[in-house]
Length: 211
Ligand SMILES: [Zn+2]
Image (tube, rainbow, N blue to C red; front, side):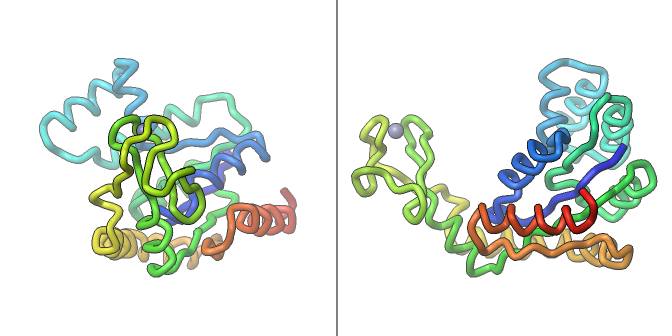
């Protein structure tokens, strides 16, 4: 099964790019976290296993993830875009040995830019509508277009919280970046540009690679 791996910190536009790429290539867009939640919701055998692990307070380990990947291998799709996966070197190793990894794209964003993007997000506490004071402003400053409620910033969108997430992200991913770089698979994308520019960069790179 051929696949493309995409990773980047929150705010890098990873999910959006993964979606656009999956549509352009006809690949399935897979987010492991969503897939696990889907198994739980559908009460599958794997879902029960995941539910048991979560109820016991433990984290889902690599063996569960590998079972999940094994099940994906049997699906009839042209290819897969892995969104935010792998997370560990062991998972990366599994992926490289069981899938045909065609590309690994890393959306690079500076901490400054991540803070700027995330701390400009606002949410309506009443109807959950999302806004961004830089890119998606409400019609009336600070007020929800839909229901007129005063907009709020999420507690984990403050600069301090983003700084903490940024450090955690690099602690988790620097080994992965090294792993894929050593294999000559990593392509770094400057993600501080617009969604269009990032997608154009990725598309050009893939077309140079024969996609
Ligand atoms: Zn609202």
